[in-house]
Each structure stands twice: as C-alpha cells, then as structure tokens.
Length: 281
Image (cartoon, rainbow, N blue to C red):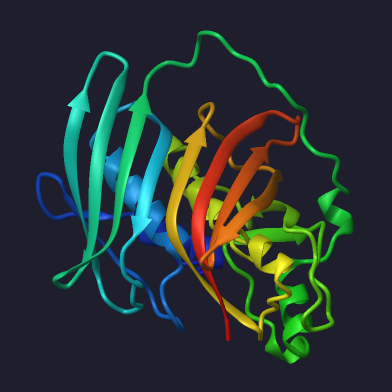
C-alpha cells in the first residue's frame, strides 16, 4: 500500500496496512491529530486485523464496543482470537490495546456465500445528486464561525442533503442523508473496501441525533458507545454511496442511531446501528 503521495486517503490506506507481530496479533499506527481517535478508524483497523486471519471469506457483520478514547501518536495492537471456522462462516474476536489498556473490542463474522434467498423491501430514499450539494467540511466550518476554521479534506468526500441550521439551538428532525465516496481509488483487496466502508459508517452518524436537541458543533459533545454493521453483499466502495440515518429514541443521553447505505443503483448494501452518548457543552 505504500506511496509517496501523502493524500488523506493514502494516509488512511497506509495506516490500514497493519504489521503482523505475532500469530494473531497485528500492530497499527494511530497517526497524529487533535482530540481522541476517530472510532471508525479503530474499527477499520480491527476489520483488517480480523480479515487477515480468514482467507478469502468476506465480512458480513460486526458488533463493537468503544471502551476508552483512543490516543493519537500511540501504537495500537490488535489481538485476534479465532472463535469458529465452519464450512460457511468464520467468527473472530478482536481486542485493541494502547499500552496496557483495552480501548476497543469487536466480534466480526465472515462468510464465503453470496447466493441464496434475497429481497429488499424498500427503495433507496429520494436524495439530490451529490454534485449539487455542499461539502461536509465547508458546512462544519460555516457553523463554527467561518471558512478559516475549515479542516483539511479527509479520506472521504461527504456531501450533505440535510444541513444543520446556522442558528444556534434550532431543533431539527433527527434524520439525515449524506453521500459519501473515497477521495481516490481503493486497491482491489476486498477487505480494504469493507474496512473503508466500516470507517464511513461512523462519519456524521451521531450528529443525526444531535439535530433533535439543537446541539450544534459548539453546543454539544458526543461519543460512540457501541456500533454494529451488517454488509448484505461483498462491497465495492469506489462510487457514491447514500447514507440515510435516523435516531428514533434517546434516553439518559444515550441516543440510538439506525442507518442504511445504498449504492448508486439503489441497492441496499449495508445496515448500521449505534448507541452514542450526547451531552450539552
């Protein structure tokens, strides 16, 4: 995966190229940055670690808990435990550690089948085409106070169908649609496509629930508590994907998020669920 072109996507791919340091242990770099590690990044590295132990089977589901905030600049070690290898399914448990502390745990299931019964009950939601929509980072900077606060582009391009209100405290329905795609070309490796899609499932997600409480970027803080993803087919993440999310309930500052991902042809390729912590600043 190595390259001399240090684009945001290239940096992500390089960090997904884990080093094997034991029979079932892999080491990854966390990179430099501000604040805590992005949870989707840790989940993506864990998917790669688990996938390195299952051969040609593809990821179809994962269930994860974020135990502690991850830190930039500290290596992460992923310990993979094989739980089952059957004729059709392989199950792996992964524990991510920084130093002596477990920061993340994941159980992932892989399969070799792609045939069998199939149905899709509903079509993809209507959404404007991404080319006509504002960029997530531009909107975030505007809501924070101006273009000078814009962060650099990330590994994913995100276009927003349902922006937050520029007025502080405005409550909006806890629903959102965004388009996402990598800012470049992914390698052919199937596990990399799956890992980058898992990375994408944690982007913009918790802010869907914050909309209902008027918690703009300056008014609220959040953290992912747990995360589940179901991939309904082997994924290719080389074009726009529509990510529709909603938050049907929140109690005790714990918001439930539900998400659906559709490819450009309107096929539902993934479903997502998360419980996240929301708190006013």
